[in-house]
Length: 96
Image (tube, rainbow, N blue to C red; front, top):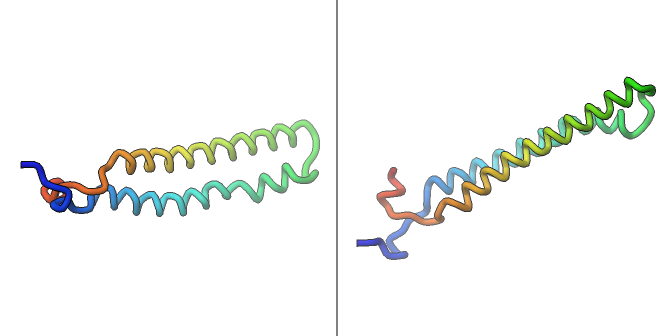
């Protein structure tokens, strides 16, 4: 016998994923901003000039971009897991 909608309970796995996503988003915001002060100093005004300075600024920009992409990928993966997890499950599935 299949449980009816009234027999279903909140999915604890989905709840855990949602809580994890909240925590990850807070940490991602910190990660995304980690290189902003240095990037702002080097990209915004002439702190250091010349070919090596340009190379450094380009490298810093690329690393900042990769960091943000990696952080976004984490959030995206968690969001995908949440979408795949049903909001409600049977009591027996919730106990597993």
